[in-house]
Length: 418
Image (cartoon, rainbow, N blue to C red):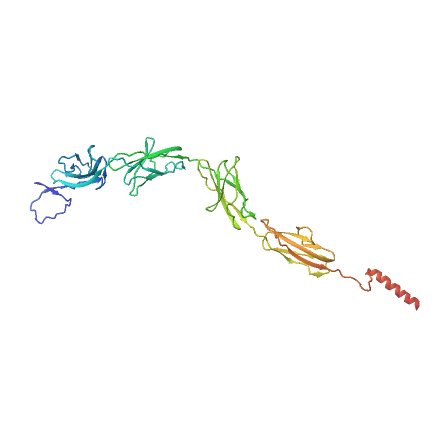
């Protein structure tokens, strides 16, 4: 004996309180109510109604209480169905009743309200890439805005590049399914509402794809490791003629310039640099808008402070030594010293000076690696006094031999008198 058990709620659990005392072969038929997936309740319908039902079920669509269905279709193996609405259906609100009939099962139905609007959707807007952009990828992100839920297709000429759906905020983006060739490209987009037809085409956007890279510039000045005494040093180097060179310290732009016909460039920082070490790099941007990788870094030191000079060793302030020995020091390392003796010109210092009797003054100044010169030289004065063998009565000094001769003469005279 074969009995067909119709399970209208698709729940095959045995909920019967009556025991069956004979064996049967049971055939369960699961019949679900039809579902409308497009349009959504209260939404705007295009040319079709779409939904799901029991696979193989007969779906009838009735409009606005009319007893005759506007279409009858069979749900496919996945349960999907679609119904083309009459082309003369008036604009405005409508109510559809959808029934699903399956052999051996009771009929099920559902109701949906929708609006018919034949006005074309607003064209989408392409916001990316920006007009005239130069891109270094063959699969650029194409993006923009459209009516939420619309299906957006991006074209180049008659070729569809990619298709996507605008989200609840109206934003959409997609990438070409096939890499685009190098060169200029012009793209447009259309938006299609659910179940409707494509609307007008968007405004075109043109951009260029180029995979050729731009060589980084070369920084030639300041020389790597240089010590400079200016806070706005000229920054210079070479690059391809006509490229725009931008010099950075970290992420901060120091200056921007354009190379000349032979590829040389130079610029100075827009803001003074602080004293201390600095590391700069540069990039080059060609006429197509392609920007190179950063250049090799250049390191230098800014030092705008004068050194402070001191005399660390000097002769006694008064003495009889005609050779004066000096030692010098400064507030910085790696300095050179220049000395001026008794108001003379500054010239490289010596460790010692031979001077005559009298007062003397030595002035010394330091010059650091950056070329800063101490504007307030250190100074030291001392007096040389030579020792006299005899002095008094206004007589002048005489050599020792003369005195010995005189003493001998006096002794001779005394002996003669005796």
